[in-house]
Length: 98
Image (cartoon, rainbow, N blue to C red; front, side, top):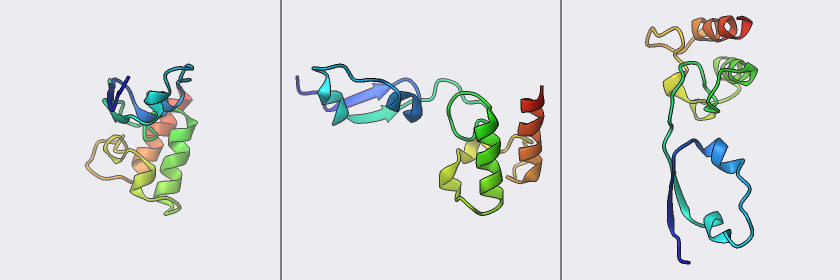
């Protein structure tokens, strides 16, 4: 089989968690494109849910320890005011406290 392109309905993190069965090694070298099924405001690490890792990623971004490449900037504006700041981190923490 000469598979060169795969369109995956999910994110890259989910794809990387899939075990490729023997005989399907061609998937390891194919060009993979991803399509997020659901975008959740505040899910800055893109794993499909808001967790403590999102709060940690936001804290690192806000403190300058990581760049915007380290988070999904489109989903980081949890306060929905058009800016990425401590208010967004607060919203994420409130969601986690529920």
